[in-house]
Image 1 (cartoon, rainbow, N blue to C red):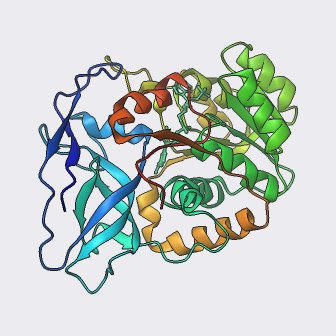
Image 2 (cartoon, rainbow, N blue to C red):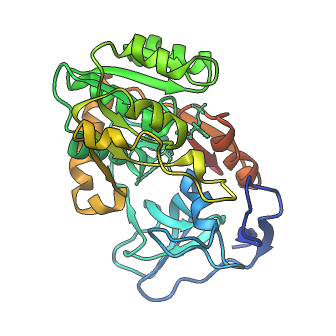
Length: 337
Ligand SMILES: NC(=O)c1ccc[n+]([C@@H]2O[C@H](COP(=O)([O-])OP(=O)(O)OC[C@H]3O[C@@H](n4cnc5c(N)ncnc54)[C@H](OP(=O)(O)O)[C@@H]3O)[C@@H](O)[C@H]2O)c1
């Protein structure tokens, strides 16, 4: 192999918003797989809000990335060399890897994606690797939506949120999305079938929630925390449920973030608020993938990939998640499968 291996490494822990010096990008030798491993070439790199969390030395659900280590990411690649019976050359694998053109994988970190039927690999990777199962288990297991109930989701035009609202509709609920632009709101209602959408940047949120959720909120799927959580808490119905999926509004915080001001609603309305990490559901992934694949193939769930070409643009692209410049699932494409 004569091609070089470009690798992103954590150079500096970020403080506040992501800056260009937190990662370094350099050419290195292509690694050699050991017995039981394969070498694969990157096709797609998923960019996720949690990348920002992994860069910080804070309490979290996985060890933070070590300073100087390759940046961790969810990846999709093609096997070019195998020293494991689990992989054949040409297999398309996905799982946890690093931001690099070439990397080694083992059965503990990646697995072959297998046939994806009518669903293009880019959509299968974009949806099944993380965000689809997150939406599926967070909404159905923790949100427990019932027909006729109102489900509100924040970051609704993002990867997880756009799927949450569509599953809510399939379950017979009223789906209301909160997003950061009029264009995103139009996409949610006109293309994805949400009943209503609120632009939290331009509208008065409590008034907009009162207008779009006349029967109150039964499930608030929280992707952002902060003031949006507070506004939704105030409108929760008795025995409402809040799956805490993400807190993106605080991932760049430089000082302790105050708790929700409307926490009293938890007591008054007997709410159930529960955090989860999709990895908790690793054993049930096939269930989510089967359901999502069926809905996608039948046109009942639409997915959108926000694809940026070139591994060299990964850090710049990651910033889009924090400015709201992405719609749907953000990823880097190095080479189509
Ligand atoms: N628990 C888990 O296992 C799990 C798994 C995957 C993701 N997550 C979490 O789920 C959330 C969504 O992730 P995703 O991958 O689907 O990302 P995404 O929604 O595709 O992208 C993030 C979106 O968040 C919105 N946002 C950014 N800063 C905000 C702020 N200060 N206030 C309100 N909205 C803000 C932006 O949209 P606007 O234009 O609408 O502002 C942006 O497009 C994140 O919090 C993530 O950490 C959790």
